[in-house]
Length: 369
Length: 215
Image (tube, rainbow over all chains, first blue to last red):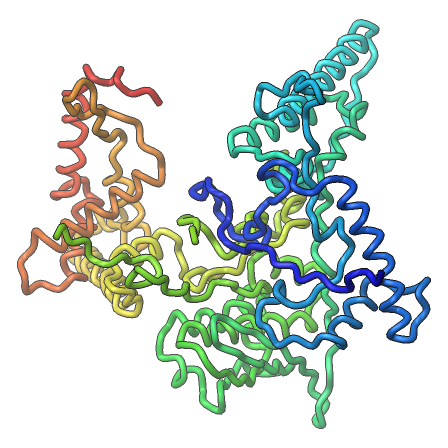
């Protein structure tokens, strides 16, 4: 039998989980509900095995259909083939036809925790959060181990290792990642207790013994994002060096061209800044990158800006000029500019109005009757 | 759909920007342990964009910006900022008048820098201890409570502004009223200082309830 080639998969994107008041920032991770931690098992192992067999068979058939080699048919090829055979104009990407390996489609779920006689396997089953408590017990065991090792070293009068672990390059697992690891829900309090315990463990001088265990719960932060390529200076007909930069803020988009050997004149959309920005604050923002680098009278600038309001346009030009100035300046100064917040795009935009409320936050007037 | 109330468009790993040039260019030896760790962290983590009210020029002062924002009504920053600059100008004029009229011996004691006057006046207005309402057994008591730095600054600024808005003659303009209040506060006189003293006296009077505080 030809296995079913496609699966229409729809994940309910509704609502992040409760405990909302502590959550300071939203990311896309919050929107995926952790299906693995909710409810008892719905898919048996035999079912999943059968799905995997059907998937592999279907993959080979698909490769045959597309005229490619079934042995070297990767997931990207599958996606392209499906998009070609079943073009879909649906807006929601998760509603379009999908063919993925069953382990990605059916999320990992906990197997039944008790045997045929009804007796649970794990000794902490009746606490309700067996994986969490067993994890805490394990971590505390490692903690006591390290302390014992420390005591042994002090008893023998040997020096304790004091190499400080570089905390700047790594972060702990987030609560959602921990939930995925343990396959059960973890509350805010529990999560913070776990992180405190890990921090205590890491703070001990001899924590290097348990490095492997700690690495399971820490993730590398990609160091300094990607190294941004700084464009070299260009020269125009008169031989003056210049460089361009683009910036945006809210709905405003700006491009700036910064010329060397200038007198500090700044022109926006063909108009002098004194006439275009009558407000002092905006002009201060335009001069901010130059003042920070100490190059106020040395550069000329010509910019074009459109969209947004008065403050947004000023912010966009500030970003554009800071990006353009990177080419004129040493790497250390670029790092200083970044730490002053001149090179980051401001992600703040107007918050949407919600239904049932008058504005983004303002509710309708409450009337008793 | 439930949206969290206190959220920000930035990822929590983003750090606050540091605008002052001097603190960025300090040589390594002068830094303490914590500052060194901070520097290392800053080198790795992404940094938020500087807000439009912050700039590295000598004229931008965080306290003055905070005060301007508190004076602002309906988002009219232009008006608030112009009022602030007119206030500082008025302070400078009054002090210069005093300076030129004063005899030689007192000329050195008169402070002409409006920024110094502003900071000193704010400092003089800050209460040391505050009162908070705690309900025990049905009755609400006013319990003396220590205040954080931020809260002290906020209370001082709020008192100054409410004092100017409410208790003055309708026709006088805000810069005039504010400059008058600031000069009085600088000399430890005036209604705002009186309000601070009243608060301190109330706290002293309710000293008996201090044990109600559990933090």
